[in-house]
Length: 408
Length: 143
Ligand SMILES: Cc1ncc(COP(=O)(O)O)c(C=O)c1O
Image (cartoon, rainbow over all chains, first blue to last red; front, side, top):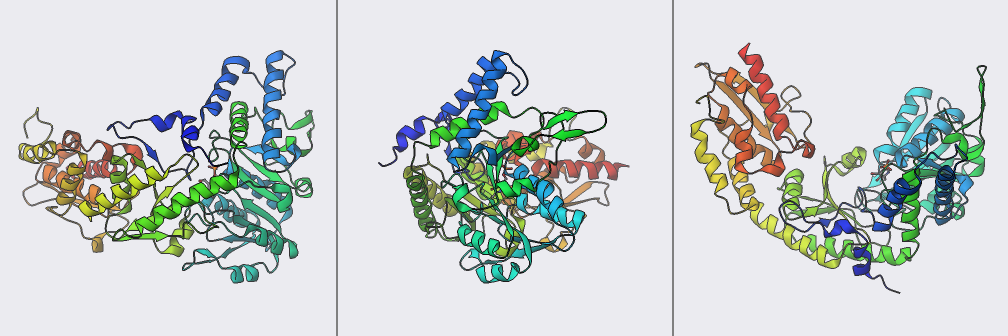
């Protein structure tokens, strides 16, 4: 089976959009957030139109339907990620997922001098909470450097950093470079020294099937909005024994068993970590997104995206003054092409591209330590996904060439 | 500048030049040209924390002062050419005005030039932040 890109595109109403200047939208900012298929939009509208009510809280029909849909989504999503619903805690996204590990696990289980290993490739979401923990409880944070020639993690330095580590937190796929890290090796080596491991799969999940149980990893952070789901929801997948070591960092309704004026007892398992009214519509939307994704072979999807990224990068390299950061097209890369022009400043370039209808990202991409390692303050980034086409890539390269001809 | 004018008369020619552009790309080309024609540039050697315009993704710096004739003067520099070009036009518009007048200016000339997409605040690319900073400085200089 090969992907029918026309049929896929037909599922995304936004791709038909024209911009105010009449240009057709070419959406190359997928690493920031993906577009949503009609079925996701419909599932969320249907909830609000037909059975909106608070989950887990009443005996009436609507509440029952909402609860069933919310938990049905958990079943579907956890199964998509190769694990059971008990291992999945809904969060607002990857950022909250990582914060839950910091405040719910690390603060309870680590103390002064304990070592947390990060990498220079991390998104701020996987840096700042650990810097906070360093302030709060005195953990030591170590950063594994990247090799700026190959744009990969320095694995020798990783092994050195592992010495005495309690927790290792690594991004599965870099949102800037599109590089997929050797997470299997990282998990194995970290666990061999007794460290727990968190993998930030915000960028990995849209590109490959993450199989939580077979990865044998402790924590996986996932974001729905980069994989066809709505914004405002994600999850942390947690291995059973690690979950037993966690305490809730937000408390309130839903997560309790019994509250008296003397004190409270908490629910067990994932329910202990989900307080307040759940993100019901968002969970239902994410469930629909996963159902939509299930029709594809993710290896084919990855190949499609990687072909576009690799072709685009190779053509961009022929444009005078363009420099690419990363090595798009390698088997272990996803669909992100970060680049700069030597004289056209990145903000200017993004505005000029926008005039042509091309949505690309500019800035530090919430990865300033990586920018520092690369020696640049920002990059432009084109990132591709399942619905992008070679035609779009071709028109992008032509338009970029035209900009360089006129403005460099 | 007359009471009913939104920008000084000598800027009409500049605004018309932008309005005569065939399309937005041509307007941007012209703005890149104007970036090189800043009457009072602030070179990168003089960029510091004090003169930095905050809230821009790109770097932008301005300093403002009152000249011997009591006229407002701004010097500006930015790494993005689009912001730099708008700075040049802004300097052409404002330099020599009374600081009181500058403090109450609106960026109507930039809208009239048709550089819409450079002007929305969410793009955070500097022009509006720069304009606000210039007005704040003018207000202090009026004091
Ligand atoms: C690698 C990586 N980690 C974490 C995040 C944050 O994810 P969320 O938006 O779900 O909080 C992002 C999103 O930009 C990301 O790219």
